[in-house]
Amino acid sequence: MVDFSTLLRKPAGQAPKPKALPPGDYTGAIAKFEVGDNNKNKTPYVRFFLNLTGWPDSVDEADRTQDGPSGSHPIELGKRQLRRDFFLTDDALWRLDELLRSCGIDPSGRSYEECLPEAAGAQVVVEVQQYMNQTSGEIGNQVGKVVGAGA
Image (cartoon, rainbow, N blue to C red; front, side):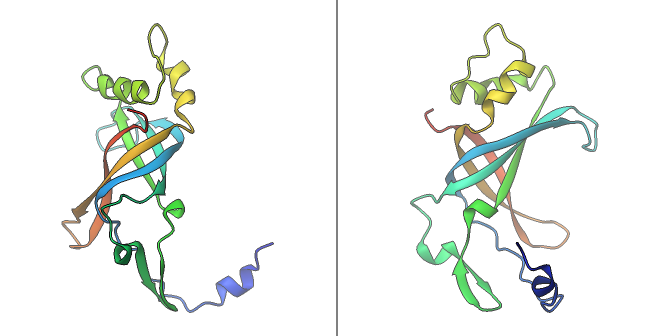
């Protein structure tokens, strides 16, 4: 059992922000999905939560670490959860179809309601990109393309 009292005694305000991951194609898996419309324009979407499982070969060992209060330590990819949204509009559904097919899911003659649960657990390649927050100037991550690992 976790000892919360020890965790809560840590000095507040000193936790380092995780550094942005270097750009590249990471191996990963679709952890789960949800549907919603709580974006600015109320456009319906399906959101896939992505767990990263492996580094791209192009990322140097030095870029796989993060400085912390007790020195440098390896970045734990499994704790970095990213997400990718697919809009559920007539002009954008082809992107979702493309992802499903690349994950080995045949959508022919089926509804999205039937196909989406099959995507959970699918092995994928996640294009991790970097962007600069226009307000703070900080570098963050976003997900570009997501395709099935066998595609």
